[in-house]
Each structure stands twice: as C-alpha cells, then as structure tokens.
Image (cartoon, rainbow, N blue to C red; front, side, top):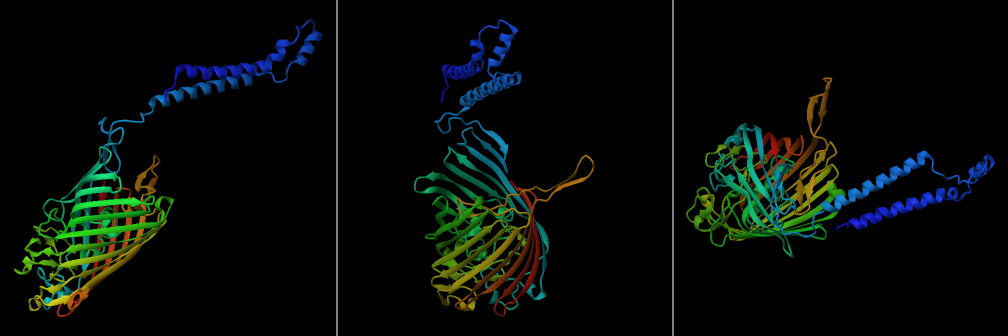
Length: 538
C-alpha cells in the first residue's frame, strides 16, 4: 500500500493536537488564575494551581516518547517502500545471488530460479575374517551356489576404495520446473548417471511429473538417499528384489496435508542397475508406492510411517544383460529373471576393470520367466532420538524354468516365491532425531545440534564440540529357496556406530556377522567383516 505524505502529516498533527490538549489540561488552570497582587495572593494562586503540572523529568519523558513515535513512523515508511509488488512476471528478473547452503546455491530475487551444485565423496576401508572352505571359487555367470562342488564366495580381501564419487546439479526453473543431473564416477571405471531427469511440480491433480532416469518408488530404503543411510549399505533386500534407478515417467503427489504420499512410475528394468538405458521388446515395468503418517508431531521429531509398494515387471530379454548375456544361447532369446545378493558390506570396485570380489553369497541363477510381482511393506517409527525401521519383500515369479545347472535346463519350477525382511533400531546419544521427507515419505539426515570442533582458546585451554553420535543394530534375512530352486539363505547381524561431525561430514563404523546357508555340494559358512566409511556431502 502506498503512503501519502498528507496522510502522514495528518497523523503527526493529531499527535501534536493530543499533546497540546494534554498540556492545556495541565496548565489551563494556571492560565485562568487571577494575576498575583501580593505575596498573599501569590500564595493563594500557588495553592490553587493544579498539582499535576509537568516536572522537568515528565517533560523530558514526553519529548522522548514523541521522538520514538516519529522514528516508528519513519520506519513504517521505509518498510512500505521496500515491499515487493504483489504481482510479477515469472522469470522477469534473472539476476542470481550465490550462497553456501550444504552446497553452492544460487537463487533469483523472486526464487523462481534455484540452482544447487554439490556432490559427495565416500571413502571406505574394509576388513574380513573368512573361513578357508568359503574361499572356493564363486559360481560363474548365471550359476547358482549348488551347481559345482566346493563353490564358495571367492577370496574376500581387505582393501580401501572410494565407495561413491558423485557430482550433482539440481534445482528449479521458472518456479515450477524441476531438474536433477547426477554423474557417477566411481565403481564402474566409466561415467554413468544416477539421477538424470526433468519435470514439473505443483501440477493440478498430478502434483509432480518427471521424465528420465529416476529412482523407482519401491522400498523405504531405496527411496531414501544413500547420503543418509544408518548403515554403510542398504539391506540385502535391495540387491535381491528392488530396483534402484530406471528410465521412465514418474508421478507423485501428497494428500491430507502431506500425511499421505503417492508415487507411481512406468519404466524399464535395467538388469545391471547402473546404466541409464534399456532395450528389449515388451520389457516394461510398473511400480506404485503409497505411504501415510498417522502420527506426525513436533516437525517430525515424533512420527509413525507405514506404507508399501507393488511392482509388476516383465522378464528381461537375456541378450540385453551386460556383460555377456545369460551365457546360454536359448536363454538369450527369452525373458529371464534372477535373484541374488551380496553381503551388506562391499569388497569390490569396478566392472570394466574389476578389483576385489563382487561375488554374490546367494543366487538363484537365471530363470526363464514371463512376469515377476513384488510386494514390499514398510514401517518407520521416529520418537525423538530413538527410531525403528523395518521392511519386507515377497517376489512371485510366473512360469519359471531353470537355466542352470545344465542338467536342469528348462525344468519347470511352477510359480516360486522368494522373500526377505530386515528390522533395525537406532538411537542418537546426543539428542538429535532422524530426519524425514514428507514430500516423498522417506527418511532424511539428522540435523546436528553441536558441530564437532577441537581447538584452543586464548589461554591455551582446549575447546571442543562433540558433534552427533548414533548407535544402531540391524538383522536381515533372505530366502531364495523354493520349488526346487536352491538359491540359498542369508542371515546378517550388523552393529553400527555413526559420528556426525556436522551436517556435511560423517564417519560410520560397521561390524557384520554374515551366515550363508546353501545346499550341498556348495559350501555354507559364516564370514565376519568390519568397515568404515567417511563421507563428505554437499
């Protein structure tokens, strides 16, 4: 609203008038008193004067209040002149101002352009204790653990490597257009893409629509970022049953004041999971996820999250699986499915030039299959510093036939069901709580109350901040045996300690006890592992 100078003058005039009347009330009696004629009359007049006449202190206080009033009116004028217009053209002012906000961020004056540039570095040393009988060769491509006598998991070597190295740019353009580009430099010895999509938000009815390489809405762990994992790795369910990234179209929305989230995606399935393209006639998939928070209090410090996802997918065309297809000429022309998992600690880097041991501990081998249906319930409780998280997955395979071992080629296996689950608890010893993303119904990072630092004051005494400390435990179980398919069983205990130095840097420590149970003639046994991860995220 524009303020007219005349109106402002009138406002000040009213105040002066009130002060004048007040003064008149206090001094009026003096003005009407008869002139003094003698000391006696002076005494009489003095006694007749109002007792409320201003003292010097009262006059000074009155002047001070009047000055404060004038300053307040001047501040109102400045604020009125600084107000932005209620209407503007989106994109009309494209000047960008930069700042640091967990990454390099730029924004236009009306915030219709927001650009964030960041990434992550994760460095990981690992150490193993492995029985000799489990060092036998792992099954070859497409094999199952029981296919060769003496099959183990290969030699697990201690090592150090970069678990993830990513560069990322994301933001909003023209107020409603979203984009993310994330380049993956690690592990593969070549450049691939994780997030690589563009789309719209706040659309009527649809909400969010994105096109490109996107996270598949399947599983709480998978939708959550690996930036914010409580443990070094996701559970083995993610390896065996869930799809992390895929090219397709993604739609999401929230309802009931963000207490309910809905996501659905029509996409391809990438057999290896790390490329941004997939080919093969009819090899499509559809995944839908629904979550709700019946309890959400204190900005997410106390919440209950329940939900689940369903995925239908067609089998992959055998010859499109990289590298080398299925290893069987007939299976390369058919639709196939495969379920397998590594332990929840990595011991390998590279695909083109591999280092370490990337063998799976359990593996069904390739199966001829037309369709796969996967149901995955999920639960999350955050109650102050304490949290509980649990998920399960059941995969139903239609018309399965064995490809390996060769003696069982095209043996009918009916409709086998494979399953797994995990449960974990964590506690933040320093009072923080795990974060939560209401837009997509998934976990986020804890916000550190006191950053870690260690220095000295002017007198040489040590000063320090503690950061945030978290302890955690997880148990997971995987069963890939059914209808004569002996993929094996995997049970794992993980104990974790996390130290968050600040919102950008953390160090994690994990100890694992991994029990592999497979049918003879392959070898069962227990492996122990210890890993540490240092992450800088911005």
